[in-house]
Image (cartoon, rainbow, N blue to C red; front, top):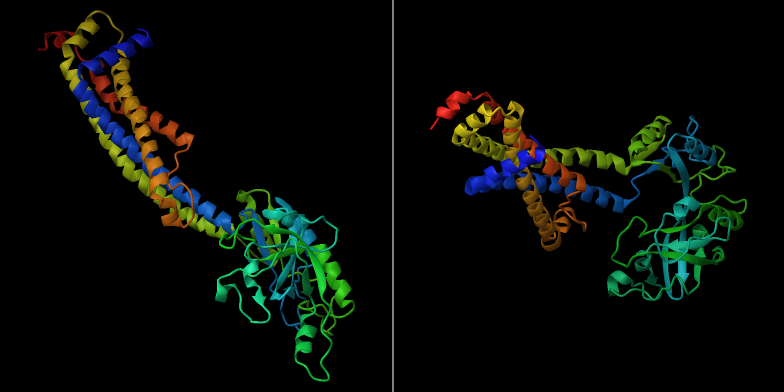
Length: 447
């Protein structure tokens, strides 16, 4: 017997018992909807967690520090400083796509009556290109020193005459990074000494006008990983510092045992870029084995991932209970159908129908119940998910970030329908075997 003929017979048999079929399908609908909604919540929470950590920084980067950066210069052991040579070693590691050394210098910035003390951080060209700019563009490599300001840096400028700033007046200072010149004092030691007055006080250090390359995207209330910092291309910063201090020690640069500066720059820290999230932990371990401190977002992500995997398992288990109850309902419906159609089965056997066709007829009926319940349950799940995401705002309330808390990917939608069909056919398997084993003569005599 052809499959289409079996399907038509199965559908007609279900239509003859509309109420029972509807109630059985309803059980599957509830089960499928429960599973899909619960699993979608687990997926949504996991994705929101990743998006939250992503907002704190790139998840494929590793931050490296040296224990010896501020160690005692008189120590007997050789310090493990972060130098250009060490940076080259990091670049040669497997899965590493780039390395950015980071060099910070403490400065005073002035524009009109407004000023602030802050750090300027020199980074590689590759690092600069990852910064999302709202204004301007990334400075060219090897060009003159230019600055990229974080979108929240402006709030740190204060009126040099009154001493008040944004936090006192709740008004942003009249500072224009893009259209007005910014003057920077690099020699802060001399600056503080000159402010003391007296006959022996040195002259105030020279102010340097540094152009602006760009400003990070976002407003004063928009946080991102670059919001509070000021960046520049590291080679330009090193050239600027060498020009200013010449042979004198550069502030915050370590000295050797004789108190003299090293002939090369010692970096505060470095950032390693990895080709894929899956390789971050491996690269981080290699760097740690080299004797350097290394941390990344993956440490927190892996811990959180374990927690959310457990949550998703529990949520999926709760939904699976409903689907298991629905499977019992399908089995019960199929058994009742066999009892009611015993004579019909006997006639079919006497007429010489293949045993496999009788089995398949009942399997198709139970599978069709699963299919109907799966499709309708999935539609209800999508509707509930849409309501949770667009009207309840649960993502913001639970995770503190905007985003959908319930997410139904295509694989989940397809798996839900297929699994519902499988559950239906599994529930109808033993009843179908019973139909095959019925004695034809006993079935015909049955009333």
